[in-house]
Length: 517
Image (cartoon, rainbow, N blue to C red; front, side, top):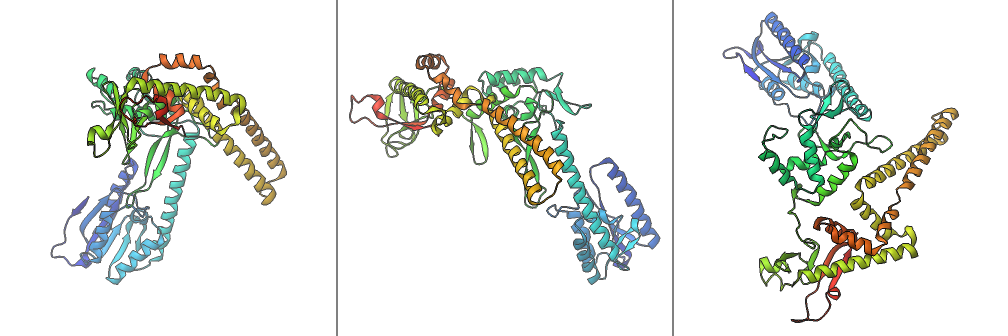
């Protein structure tokens, strides 16, 4: 705030501008009151009149943070409205270092003004060097605080402690252990949400059910689909420490934004911070299910309509390349239906014929995979990629564990290489210490390699070897699951137009497939 107290009819030499800065910490607010009393007492002793008091609650160490009250106080002095800028201590004025304070003193000197730090007995008109030294000490202390805070937060994450902020819905923060635990009032509802997501219900339907029952959201308002999606993507909901990323903002303080991935330790393993609403395996499955129902665009994510038909979003018009939609008993070109014949002459084909043809092609591809496993073995890149997609569908938790193990193995090998470089090239450690660290790291690498060997993606293709079993499983599955089966093999299917009305060309000969990539 800025309080104008006096100044009319008084010479600038007898006026003083007071600048006070505080943080949100309770102790700092008490310090602010003490500082203001000290500055006012000094002004009274000097026979000066307080023209204005400028108080703001911002950082003084970050160059990108705007400080309008600080700038206004300095501008008033430079404009000749007062000849003195009074602060309690130099670190309360500026923490950007000697350069910033020294430059300001130069500007004041040019207009016959001065800077005073009453709590330290300093006056720039008499000696400017203490201001410069204290300003540099304040900058160094600000940097040290930042380093200690960052290191402390990261250490707390590694130790499995909650990093701060509000716990996700259904959980609370245990004050003794600083870990997550079930919330006695909301855990049951949170578990219902998780069960509904695992059952394939959409976030919007779940939000509607909760609102109909009068259950308030975490903010005390009505539920929205976005709130359900945020829960589904929050690793803390599975009892894992959430990761964050730093987002730079021009002219503003950086923003630390959570990302939908767990924080990982130096070995690349997710860190647990207590009991979650869902297990890590359920979390992986929910992310897959929710990911199928969202689409990204213009920097935002929006829900996709539920696909009620097998080939919606997969089938494309062979004339224009656009999508085809289900209409009645047919699939038709969307552009032709919505934009007319000028956009595309269009294609229309019976839904049952084309779905049967695509299913037949998919099963034929299953047979091809089974044969390739015999002739090419598990080292085929195409088969391994297919296995990865199949694993993501069948067991997303195993895929997550395989990725975490691979990341940990990479980190361990990098540490081993650095150890060897530090010892043999730079001579930074004794042979005894090197041998101990090398043996421990090598043992960790062997453990991770053995664990990685258990995640054989090609083994997940064994279920595709029996085409008849796969056919029965496919036909018995709901449409949403059948679509995921198809996506393992195909990214897109294109149907060419008939040559003439009543064209006897088999449907399978009119289809072309973009293999999964």
